[in-house]
Amino acid sequence: MGKMTPGELLTIGLMMFSIFFGAGNLIFPPALGQAAGDHVLVAMAGFVTTGVGLPLLGITAIALQGGKYIEFISKVTKPAFATAVLVILYLTIGPLFAMPRTGAVSFEIGIRPFLSEDSITVGQFVYTAIFFALSYYLALNPSKLIERVGKLLTPVLLVFLVLLFVKSFVTPLGGILEATGPYVATPYSQGFQDGYQTMDLLASIAIGTLVVNTVRMRGIEGRRALGEVCLIAGIISVVLMSLVYGSLAYLGATSASVLGHSENGGQLLAAAVGILFGSWGNVVLAIIIALACLTTCTGITSGAAWFFNKLLKNKISYERLLLISLTFSFIASNVGLTQIIALAVPFLVLIYPIVIVLVVLSLFERWIDWRHLTYRYAAYFATVFSIVDAANAAGFKLDGLNAFLTQYLPFYTITMGWLVPAIIGAVIGLVVSSARGRQAAGAGEI
Image (cartoon, rainbow, N blue to C red):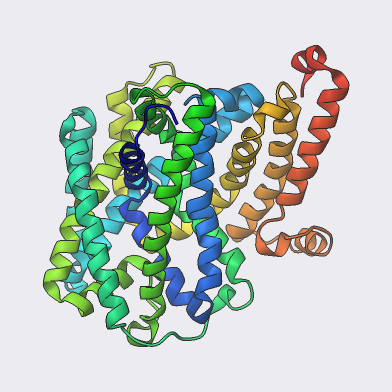
């Protein structure tokens, strides 16, 4: 394992946890638990698959590529396809959804409980204006501030969550009711799709280099050594995230009999904290969430602005891109958390299968080697069916096509119709590449 001690591995694991577990991750497990009810364990198994397992695979894949995963995607797919995927990815984890969500989440959990109904609209406008102005200032002036706040914030957040979980287990809010909605018939697949909302697999592509470089600074070199360290640290992070997600889901599952079905997980969590700890609990939670969301927003704002600045070859400055993205995020955050979550679903249903396919196949790069058509055909086939799923998620019901695919395509009814086509595409790509040979494949791939 190179020069890394168990203590250093634990440090990397905690750092990975703090990177992935943002304040937005707090709101989805409680909402899932409330709706899944007595099917919460099966639903959480699906949620953990995409919300925890896939980000771990993403970090491992990035480590195996030496931290240069974006370059890898561009190499194994056509440049136009790679650019389109990366643009959608950065827009999703940037100004379209993840950035507005930081402002909306921190308002819903931290500020809204203290406002009367008739002052919510004005309060949200003022709060998000201040929030995104601070994010702009911090992104313009990067310093040790965010790192120090993050190091202080993660332990404080964990301590608060432990107290919340112990309290919720010792004195639960109420009993667990029956499952509702899609959690009645297909709890695992619905939980699987809910895990997309964390956006952590997408984030792993954008921020995985940071983890790899941190490991390198500890004296670890070589793809295999980097992959092993990241895998062990990732398992530490996975265990922590699974415990936190499971506890939040239990809190949500026991809340329905007392709170009813909340509009979103932010309102549910704020109400539960108010019942368990009183108004002072809401105050502490408000401060923690505001700081967590602020540092998260600053980080993803910088990352997205940097990417588009490079993509546009400096035609639009980093500072102007920051201003544009934060202004858009400010406007979008005032749409409301529930609406942001709903609008994000079609984009996530579109992009996630493509990223899953590329991440999983990249773990077998040693065997696939130069046969790049394996990646391309798998990604292209998955894209076709993820577009159909995204259209359905957006409300464009293609009845005839849906009926046909439901009858003949496995897993289509659980929004995983892309899986079998992706496997078929990978096999075809592998066979065609092998038949063409190394030189011909490099020169004439589609």
